[in-house]
Length: 154
Image (cartoon, rainbow, N blue to C red; front, side):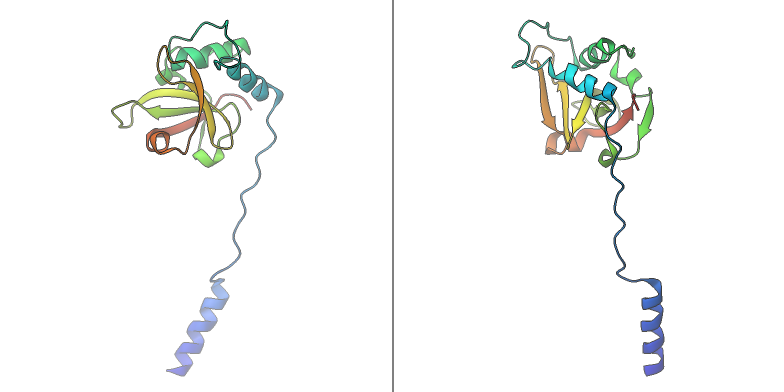
């Protein structure tokens, strides 16, 4: 019995049980284009620019922000969701990535889009007529509805 216990202990030690954690590699710094997109998006905030007309909806907001930075996107959030490259996890999001959410009824169908800023914060037009605002991706409401991210700019 003792022999088996020593053998088991040796195997566990050799397997690296409880080994060191692998650190996530830091993302590259945001490009000037990504910073410009976020700067443009923030000019739509009510406290920043009073003379800007309200976008019609979330995809109109995202489309206008990117258009001001010379990037053409499709009109609907569903069509935007196939542009660029997919971001594997919400932890891998970078500045100016698009974030997509299920609509009011939940499910897997895209119903909303915003622009990721940084540190779990995104900017979006919540509802027509309500204006643009910044919110946490990790709030209960948005975390439950998050579907995916797409990278439009490098």
